[in-house]
Length: 243
Image (cartoon, rainbow, N blue to C red; front, side, top):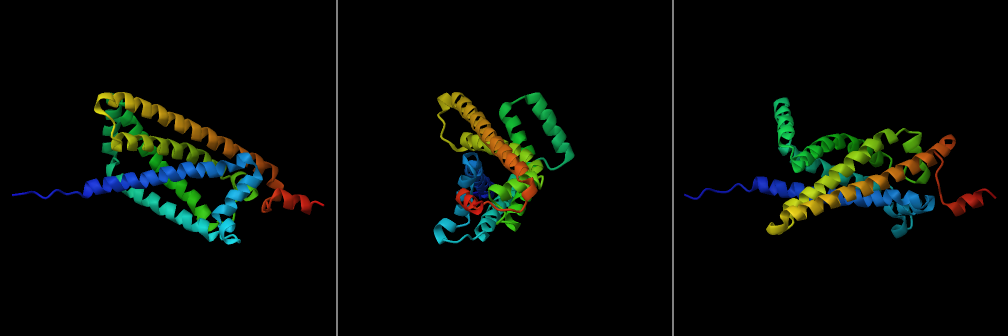
């Protein structure tokens, strides 16, 4: 008698990997867009208007930002639900995992534990960020974002989110590469070392980029603290308004 193979766990694992990959690519792209502030307020304003559809439609539609936030939140929920299958489900399991990590001292297993911790923290941190974006999509821009970060004290949210999201994304990308890439058996250990080196390089790069961007927003917000609510409309407009 032939026993039917239950492919559900494999399908769920594949879906977890695919949603994770999409979220990793989104996080990295998002970081580049956010860091446009390093090129100046006008560059960041141009990116803001792009996501609001102004360059395409001729008028801004902030609702597009809300839709994007809703889609990303949905992906996060799906990814988190699928990932929870592998999380320890009780204190006893967490204690057993802790003993296992201490005794085994296997770096890849430790990286998995880092993903568990950062993933748990990120579910709450990223949800709070996406909620703010979803509810106030028009409050994005050189001054609006800086005011939220500095005067609204959102840097207290974004600083730990920055660390968690890039650790989680970098480790996740590494684990996906080890799991799905056709690495040659005879050089698997060397390939894994190179992938791990790339992982730490990518994490370090995005943490530096994100930190520089966050500090820039904080500096702008500090200088704009007495004019909270004012919107930046471009250097040319400001110069004309000052005449």
